Length: 328
Image (cartoon, rainbow, N blue to C red; front, side, top):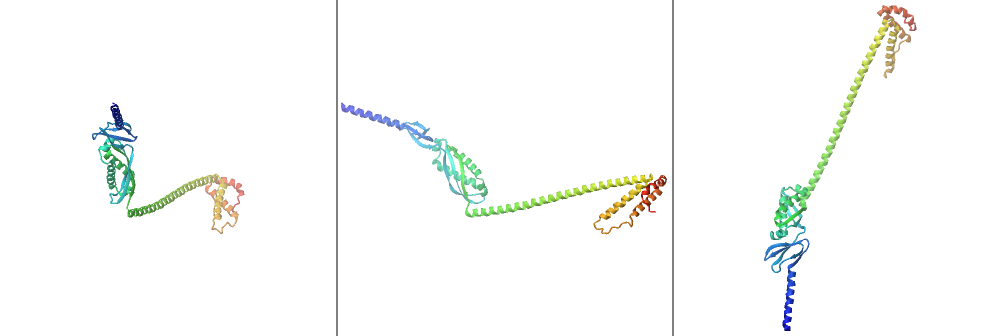
């Protein structure tokens, strides 16, 4: 009896232990950032999310532990021929994230290798359609093209390509030396052009300055000529008015007016002779009284010419002209 009891207890213990083992086999803890695929008799059934997951022991099994975090993948260095037949070595880096664990597991075999080959082939396609100068200067454009192409091609695999970056584009050494000489020649050409442009601008500015100076000088001469003509016109008008006044005065019998007029002209002529720089000798009348005498003679002539009231008046004025010495 005791042997039976002890055997039954052992059986129960075994059953309990077996039950515990089975329970533990059905419990799966999925870490954060991962998803586990569950297969039942070899067929995908579901994906376990991060946390505590349950499966049916001996029926379900964990298929693939998929990393759902963003991952980085190197694009190995490869030789690429550009459109202008320049061979360069190119490498890069790619970032992707799995969005669907089932597709990334069952739609493609060896996911990372597939992405790597896809990136390499598209890298050759994109760079092969560009000239070397464009490839070296338009990396952002290349990155965008690669991202669009690779992301579209890998969508059926349940992942998202978030970024593609070209790390290095290395031309051959002889091509680098040629590019250096070309760059030096371009800079020298630019320097010569800039220097010529500076000389040209300087000549243009100088010519414009001379032009403006000539225009201002011509305007000054025109203004001066205009003012000179105006001054001569005013002087002629004044002269005519003075002559008219003198004529009227003589006609009225005022001999002193014509004496004053002739004396003024005589004095102005002597003044101009005396101001001449190259005149070392100035001719003067033999006697100062000759001037007054001539004035008196001119006055007498005028008196005879105008006659009439003039003669009548002259008789009366002779006494008044006594202050002017007569040439007689």
